[in-house]
Length: 388
Image (tube, rainbow, N blue to C red):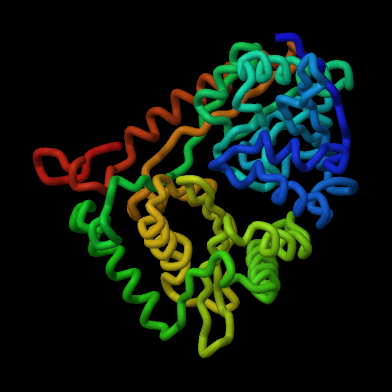
């Protein structure tokens, strides 16, 4: 299939109808509205270290059949696949790791398609053509490397075929095994894990708070303001960078309310804590949480148990609760491999980093074997938890 690859540097240069025609049916973070919220709020763009680039694949008729979104990065913040050691390695040898080219959803460690492809076209040609174009762009622009993060397992094959090294990482995902309700889910856990969750839920509910799971038309503009205040509180407590600007929440709560689950806790009408999630198709993604006051176990109730309950009511298959968090295993989440792809162009650094990736993969395999499976069907013959 003959393709023409065109580079544009602004989301506004892409016809919204074209983007929506290509966006994934079950991944909300590829939706045009999400990118528009990041862009219009100033969360990405000038002064953020996230310079947007979009590679468009056109067929012989001039129809756009694929889009690969990229960012020229001046740092590694907001990525959640950590390569600071690599940057230090470059610096120690008098070289610069930045700028680099990145394909990822900003500030969003969620697995999903990274290449938007027309479902009625030759997806192999489109994907490999766009990856080749990203590699060529990186080299011609004098960038150190090209990276694509949180790839679907099938999609990572295309990157590997183009010579990128595949790096494995771990997240913790909850899977709906056809549970009738939350109690049915609890009954699938071994006794200790089941009792722990029941105890945590009782403690969270003992605070006398009103908890609501809001989505769709239940979401109002004031909920965006509440979420922004909670987000700012969380980043302040952690002394972290507030990547998202206030306008981001205003935008998504308006344009994506049919794909948002906002779990809100209030004390006699006063909002005190909340968790923001996105969902589409059969998947649910936990993203942001905040609390204005300390309440024992409320985090687990809002971020995990209320959200699992929602997933069960909506018959959703998978709940990704965000990056890291080994504590999720004892609450019914299982370790899941995530995939990223990396190509470094300076041979002095490429092979040592490939070796690092290989060593890291073996260490992760060993770590995974050490985890205990919280489900009853995984109990060994002694009635104890078996490894995952």
